[in-house]
Image (cartoon, rainbow, N blue to C red):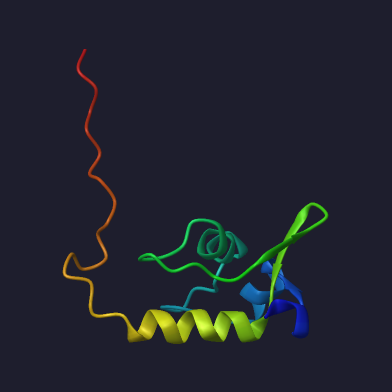
Length: 87
């Protein structure tokens, strides 16, 4: 699908997205969506040379797919709590 769309870098995708809670979306967030995913979904991306790229159409599909998922019962707290090392 990305082959037929206008390719943009993760940094450019982050610039084009609206801010969240008054903060701009960082390119690292877009990288994480493409490489690790969110709630089992991953943003479509390609590696061209040393850069990862995507398209705004892919970002839109990703956003729509996330919106269609049922609410997260954990309230988004999917990370494990920090445990202090003994000693």
